[in-house]
Image 1 (cartoon, rainbow, N blue to C red):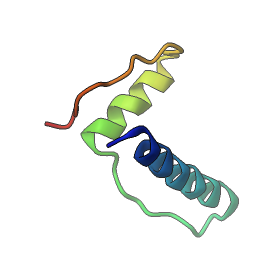
Image 2: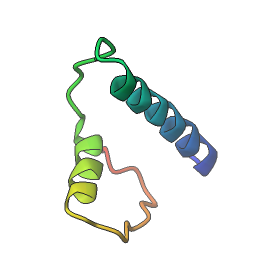
Image 3: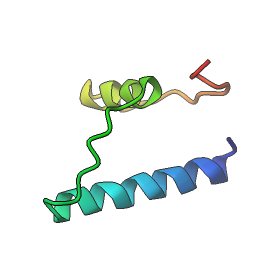
Length: 59
């Protein structure tokens, strides 16, 4: 994906998060995939300097 596509995906995820927070009935129940879990783990570990991924990390 290019930077613009990443921003669009991030915007979609932010809106989903906002809906989840503001509406207790809006729940998808989807487990995070391996790539998403990597991001979750990094944020929860307090990783403030996230390194740029320059190749697909899902393969």
